[in-house]
Length: 88
Image (cartoon, rainbow, N blue to C red; front, side, top):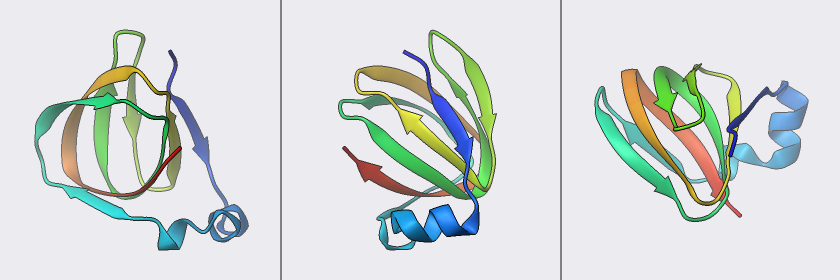
């Protein structure tokens, strides 16, 4: 299961209605997270390293991430992260 990271331009951001998605905020911390549903996540602020059994990646503001259902990861947050997300 791979995490998909894309960049969105302003037009895509508005077209997808991301500004109305729920907000999740995490301070500098490290925690495990299990995605029981596919989740679409826009990084609005902060930076974090996300580790799964398949890969390690760093996310930053402007990244649009798709986490597939059934994936377990570790979030290691370097700078407080604000995300806007949608569950499938």
